[in-house]
Length: 350
Image 1 (cartoon, rainbow, N blue to C red):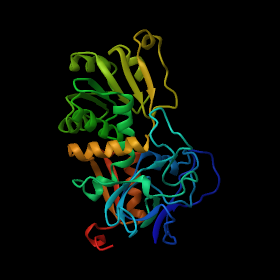
Image 2: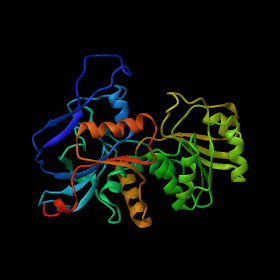
Image 3: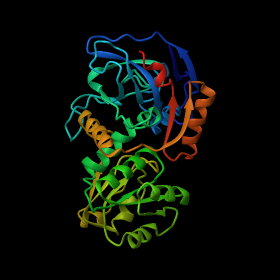
Image 4: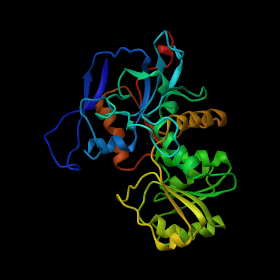
């Protein structure tokens, strides 16, 4: 079967490497007891895939198929999912504890910690890590959901505790997690505002349900946000870091919540005394449990939510795939970058 991995390169410092993509032929995997074989129909990228190519992601292993997001059809006749379209839980080791993983936690795709991925024609997974895909989603939309949907669900619902009527800020709109957080919060009945450096992205976010947005390139964007919202912010869902706590301490309500699921502006997040005096909660949030994954997929099905797709590439030609990584590197995308591996109808007879 065909797969795409990272091509080994001479040793270099992290950040000074950029692993090339390498097409390979691997033996088609066969399931062990408790496992099922999945024909991968579509997969999608996350920022971790860019970090892996730069050598900035722990445990990166060039011989392991890439990508954590996968959607496909189960080909194992003895499985309760036989011939059904399913989503793959993008991690393992975390069952249901809302505080954090009960066991060693590892994310799917391109690492020695979980030596499997979705950028391959066939893959084998534990049956318990699969969830039937919502029927209203296309193959591309389904593949776009798992990792960003799980991350956004935990950040917005478990940690952010977003409820109807809350005023919510989602920073850096355009990435997969931020967009899913927007869709979840809007369906929950919250009033949602966004930040971006691009006015067009703010306008597109408004079409998805955001009330408005501000450019974070403005020196006083938090004041503009407060005036626009007409009230104190209840929760912030943030993937940038930087000075978000300092800025929000001026406009967030007492006891408000700032949930950090990433720090693209740097590896630290200063916590100010002003935030302490406002009783602000700063909450870290990464991925989520199997239960949260199942809850998230159920919410998507109930509310007919569709992940936003930025671009789709068909097939595993590495020259075509490079364009997806280039979009992510340059921040061009609004939504998910998807690889379509096979046609749904062609695999219906499997």
